[in-house]
Length: 178
Image 1 (tube, helix red, strand yellow):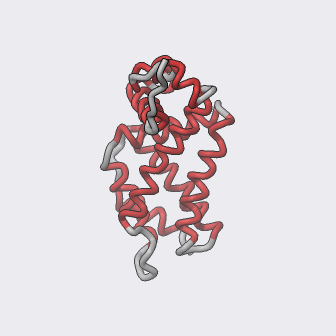
Image 2 (cartoon, one colour):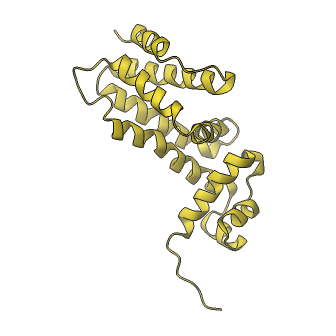
Image 3 (cartoon, helix red, strand yellow):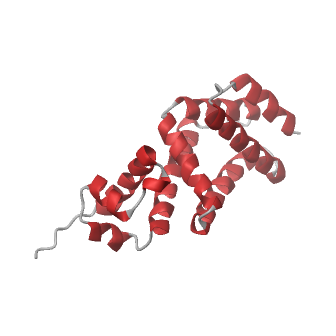
């Protein structure tokens, strides 16, 4: 049997896992469902990811890139003269107004860390990265509080179906900033 060189296979498997979770939820994620979605042999998924937790960690890392890319693309928090609360509220508004399925997927994988300890370090990295970015404009304790508040606002919007209110978010975030 000739082995085919496929340097993008690992990435395609991760992309397929994200699509499977997006379509079927975490309950629909298996090596078999991902292999079918990626159009690769089952052995390829287990070769690259021995366990489903390994696959979920890779998917969560990749999914988390969405928000980080938005922060960088928007140049959020770079202008020292800008209103931090308005910057954060605008950033979340843009993120939630984008690919809603992608945002829901990020949170589904993020919240999976409640039951899957292997995901906790990745979820913690996401929280810490956000707090570190915010800490460029405020102190570390306030930055962590703002990151937690943003998480709560996003969860309420996603879980209740209430429309995101940027003005409300800005006002609440401003109350936390000394």
